[in-house]
Image 1 (cartoon, rainbow, N blue to C red):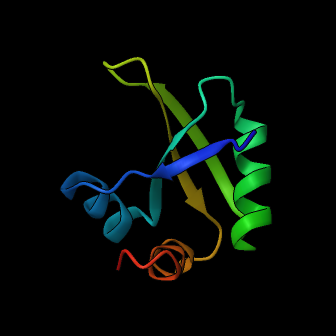
Image 2 (cartoon, rainbow, N blue to C red):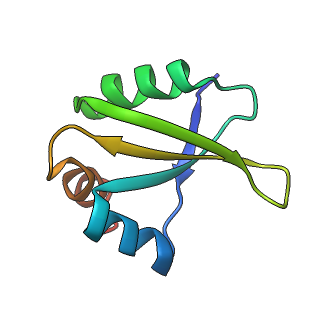
Image 3 (tube, rainbow, N blue to C red):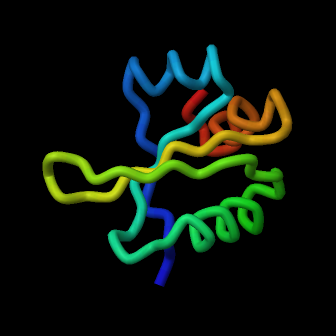
Length: 83
């Protein structure tokens, strides 16, 4: 079972990307911060600095991820074809 579901891209998420080099992903409700970090580092080959998780009002889990490389978030979104 995959931990990551899909990147969460909104205007607010784009501001976080531009100002703080952070990406948001919807993740499995059972995923731990370690699971999320491990999968992101494996899939995108970028070092994760920090993972913050929260539950949305719809009962879904969202992860806000910051990366060690200043350009990692932009690179990941461009690889996914979002930017």
